[in-house]
Image (tube, rainbow, N blue to C red; front, side):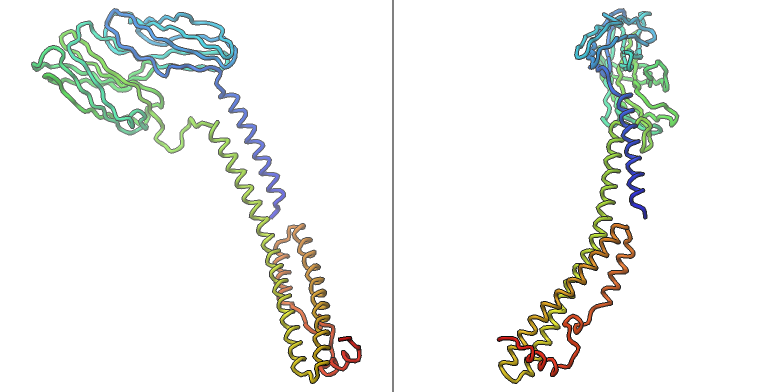
Length: 390
């Protein structure tokens, strides 16, 4: 396996991913912030309501504000202006329904610049001046984000504001997006005394688009209109969504890739170093075995020595034999290490393993390392003649 090529390919992939990351970062970089997530107001027919939007600029740019809300007159304190870097501006927004008719209006305010565009959902509830009932919607937090093709439930509590007698009222349930399109419309009639609580469950079709929606309830009776609403989001039902946050995913992916490459390099280095460790252990075992055999030989000769002088000669001689033998085997070990280093440089791991097994089986001859190939009696006579001084 050519690890050098793998490293080159990995470096190229990382470089491409880094470039893609900075492209996405530059494309998705925010140039201004808006403090409002949604604008929601409740008014009586014929009234006007106002909201405030604060815009903070991250660079100097021209800002334009417009609205897309059917059935409403919308006006801004300023609709076009230059906002310098680090500055902020509050814009007053006024809403008034055009036809003096009650109901719930949805739409959006669009804030755009040269670099990007942001939308703020708008819900305006217009109730009749004479209100006979009040509506309270209670929804569990998990139903604020709903997956496509699933169901959600809402508790609807309606209060009678005039008496405790029984009255029949008409209810209209709506789900509407902020482009003014209605995707669900259901009508119902109920009888209410002082108050009533009902739970409604709604199923969302799989083909429903993802995005923000308004759930709306309208109660009508005796020329009285009461309203209530809240905003929720429909998200993808699949695990992986199409609107992934690449500013987070891409850096995480690059980090994981780098960690993987580092782990691979560490594994390869450790794998090769492991062979060196095995060779070092083999060398250590050989030295211990050599010293053991020399000691056994020395004891054998001492056992057969007849005089104190002979014993001293034997001890002296084996001291030199051990020194010479250890020197020879260490020279042999150095040569093996050089061969191992050469094979590692050539990245021949299999050859290193073969050599390790070969050297292990090869072993050594103690007599060769001791440098003696004569009989024990001849050795003793020779050592005496050499005249070692005691």
